[in-house]
Image (cartoon, rainbow, N blue to C red; front, side, top):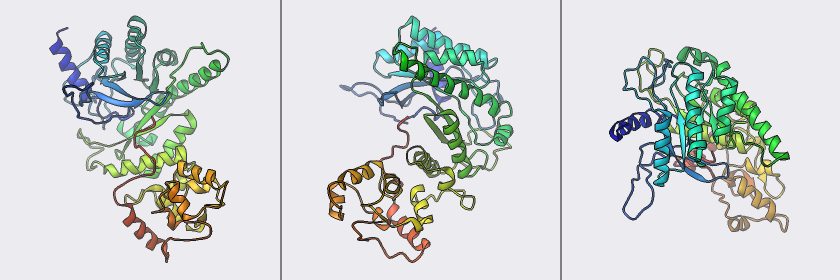
Length: 417
């Protein structure tokens, strides 16, 4: 095929893939410069994390933007008047190798619209993976989408060939999915998720007895939820995420603010949610994965939306002033990491240091622990240096002044993957 035609396909199918957040995209526009190495321009290059923690650049494309589904929120839905294109498996293989040899990428992220049916689309994805792994001996990172409704045998075959699999749940409730994507269902989505989980567990068990046992999706599985397409509250979103983590051992749930790129009578009047809302949901997700918070602790039925001016951990602390102040010389790890401004690393430093002597405020400075916010929620050797708190409202206002630009201790919004 002529290069110009292939390049035209590449332009269409990288652009069609940009709304999929379940592979960490950098959004970088940094192009190649003389004397430099690599290219992080926006033409399909995104970043993710490998099983061993390395940051890697991926070619992010769709196999095709043709689709038999008519999801109301999707730019590639069947009724939308957009230019369509489709790669052959050989073309995807050629592109991946050419980009890889030029040091632009270290791997491939490949998704696809549904063509024919789920099994037919999965067979094409498997064809790409087999060409790369067996014909070209490609050992780079590969992340592919398992298609909802595909047979378990095809999901298993694809999982043996790639590093990570993902199945997008898209919406947090079954009623929203029935309204906006009636051709999909939670049953079709959860089936491949369960299959992937089972094979990952079996693979881990086999590797304990034989290091030569075949790997299955060694970098795990992930999913994506769209925020704001069905007018759901934040509590519903993080409750669904918590259920997914517990049921399917996901590595990550990614969140993507709804972008009204296509008109629909079901999404009419819905504007794009503020990015700060997406940011707060990621922070809450972080609290659930690493700080052992539950969704019902972070948000309540009375307060189902995040305070956009305060991070979720601070909001929780203000609601639970009866637990504070905490004496850091006696508190255990769980109590320490719930103090706003103290992360897991800081809490572990405190526990190690106090084995040798009772800590004082000057010792925290030596340990590189900021007390800007934490001092309002803790005592150090019995000394309280926080402000006089007259009410929860008063403390909330004080903390909003401290918050300033959105931040979160030791948190990268899109890492680890």
